[in-house]
Length: 254
Length: 222
Image 1 (tube, rainbow over the protein chains, first blue to last red):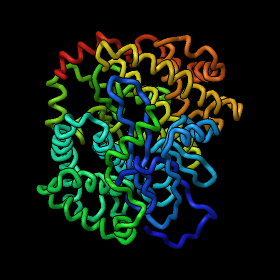
Image 2 (image 1 turned 180 degrees about the vertical axis):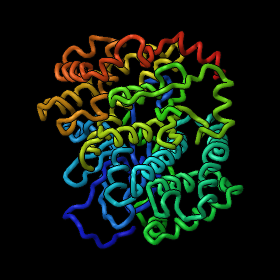
Image 3 (image 1 turned 90 degrees about the vertical axis):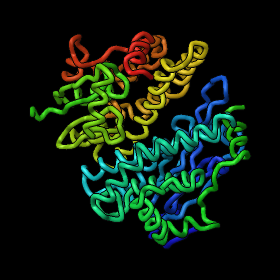
């Protein structure tokens, strides 16, 4: 995993979330796979939201505290560490941050991943939000009934190919740069890369008709910090499996 | 070209209502192009005006913005409703995201099949009373100020007020013990721009009913 020199703060951020829940592909140094589960009561056990978020353009060490039992979650809730009784929660700069998007925005802003002005920021915001819609499908996927899962893979592939990828392909083709916005790495690139890699796990040839996105993916993956993060042994979490699904149910649903 | 923002959405609250509230509270006049039938929506798509083929879309300052959060953040920044620094912005974001979590549960009730509606309604009651409203009440109590962040009106206060109106319409008793939230709701409601928006005849849309949803479903075939 990547550890870089940091003009640091005595303790880096501490991320609280369930590890298996963390199945995920995180980019950048702080890959926070987030188990933001909502125990909504529905006939089928509702899928907790497992959000894979990539934070911090590298160079930030962080520790992780994995949630594996209900008791651990209870302890965080009782100790009033969680603003809305939910995880993820990231302890950083003396604060306890919750809500995935807020955490992402804070870190992006802190590490210059949010564009240089309001217009760039808004563009980044739009791209991130669109991509998160797609990523969310992936996050929910392991919690669908087994018989519904293959159909949903097709649905995700369609959405990716018809709705989302064409937008980003066009953007990249339009300016010919290596990054989506402002010719520098931003949160939009991180989230998109994460989503593409996650989709490729399920649908290996998903980028076959998107040459610019293919090149983009390769280039981003070769950025040293990201490259290191994508190597075995890093804090990047693996794709979700049955253990993960069971753990989530145990923590949030039992 | 009037220079006013133009909002493209259906004639319902949905995901545009928060944007309407924010613009109104900021004193920004806006136009609406309401999508009344499938053809209206198709035209927007075919004209390439919707980045991800979805609404809300807001034409403003030369942009065609989509994604409600992105739109809200732009408006909040432009009209100084987003705090004075990164930390304030963070707090505003966290609070707003929590509000969105509760807000989304209202959509769930509408979308739930008949046999699941009661459970969906119970969930709103539970989450409002035990999770979200107490959190915001606690914030106000902790600093004793009239607004959630930085002792100044922000996106968080406006959206909370919107949410409180929704909760009240759903079940007024849910607000019962939250005196500071009620005070905030009153305070924000009395701001001239908001007061105007709360009058009949404004661009504010009515609380969603099952009938409205079924009507939309027929018209837009989903």
